[in-house]
Length: 272
Image (cartoon, rainbow, N blue to C red; front, side, top):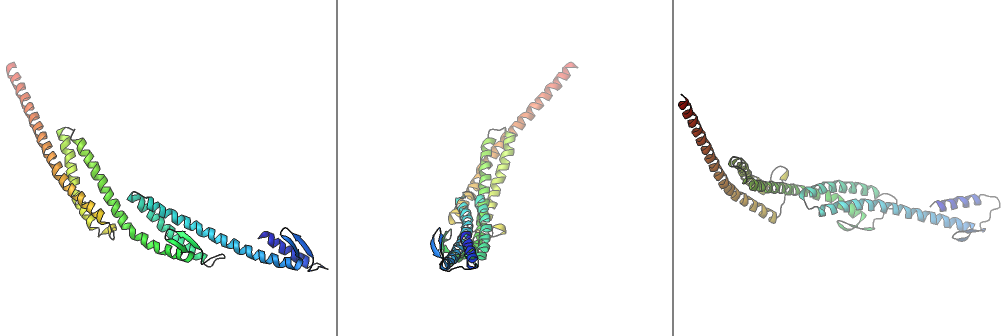
């Protein structure tokens, strides 16, 4: 662009000089031109290159936006844990909102090409259709959030249950009094599991309203609820045994204490 702008300046300078001839042949890096033809050539090339430059700038800006959208959608697809999926979802919303705003601003800009095709996460689209897809994506992503929060709640519940199951195994190696304490806490968690799984099955209130878990996910939740019911019974039996053992140990300790007191009293009588 600069080179042809300088060419035009030089032609204008020559054109204004006394005795100039339009037929004067001028040698340039791209050929020999009469002065008049050189002027037309430089004007045409300057205009053409300006258009090309504007088009490249526009495409570069769009490709930058496209790269961000593609990146966040890739992160959502790669997220294996629900917490990571929710974070990627939130980031994607910010990106598609920015995408729609920035693309709308380029539609009147120099270099805009209404027919250029781009490969996007929404398919092969022209620029305007890409902007419209970004606008629609915000609502779609927001609708996914209750389901992602539901999955986080289920994942948290399962992690807590697994932790308690591990604690039960460790507790069985402890003395009776400590077993009673640990098993009582475990039974309480398994009893609460029933209420928590029921709330998750309803998923109709609070930040879970609008959640749409799959049938497979709901079936898994029902199995968790049944398992918790069995664990209330099973751990409850272990608790009952631990309570009996603690009571027996306490009775034995009390009996030993009474015997010790009797021995002390007998010793006192002998001394008298």
